[in-house]
Length: 430
Image (cartoon, rainbow, N blue to C red):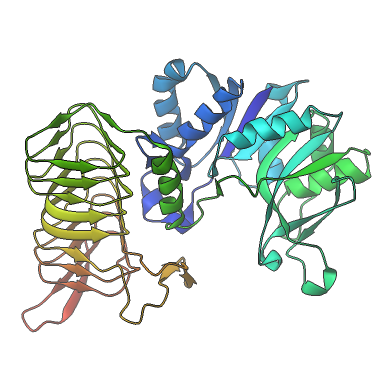
């Protein structure tokens, strides 16, 4: 069996994190999301993989050209030149698949690899033409809902059904298994009202015009996350860290306290007086401390410095510095970020209500009582800057000393307070 991963999208809702990389290449616990997926596929015997790429595809290709031999998988690439829908993207795989069964999934999914094992076993039980994974949801009106018959076969696919349609609550989870006959259905697929070729329309053609049976399989008992919104990265990070075992490859100086499962990579030094509460991941060539306080569910990539500061449930990408008297909680710091001494990030409202974050032009409720900030690549803050909860600082931006950030900062911006305490904003582009 082969695999096809749709990894062409930009991930605009994750900006500024995806300003410098495709969404599947966001690293968690030392590996991009896409690599975690490929390792999961390899664990069930799938070692021929096609990546449908597009946005910043060179980053994906360069990374896996270096690592595919270590992963012991063969990876091919096809560029999706135009974004015309999921069926259009899947159609690129026809020559790669030829006459074999295949697994197809979206590249931004992060899932328990046990799911692959379960669905392959189910698919091979009988002569199904296809298999679709399903999740029970509380708000079916926001999803494509799959209606099954008494034999658990797909009967109908209803996009964002109204309550009176009584379509149930089984949503498409974005992992499929198919025989090559699906490509005949893709050929007959017409554009939808969204002016796209929808893969769910292809499935309905396979059922109704070609008599194909598609089995629906619930994966509710397994971890699944589509990482469409920034705070969903915390959930995937937590899953990985809960599964991680302690390993210390770096140097631990005297008077360091490590509690719980902690990974420390090669070339990393944890200096005296530091206290690390696991589970935590600390990658390679980092300097931690002296007197750093690293709290649970923190993940630090490579070449970072965390000094006399407190960091909690935060994802820190490579080449970032949190050096002096900083507090960072429930936040994401992208690569090449530098925090001035005394910079603090708020992560809790006074009224204890859940925190909203602006996604594109709308505010979306995260459902989280604690949510800090997202700071984009190559940004920096001056001394004693403060960032309020749920705010985003765009890439290549500078926050001046003693400045309070209580709104999202666009990319390439300079925000600072003048001598009268007024907030000034300038474009920082060159």
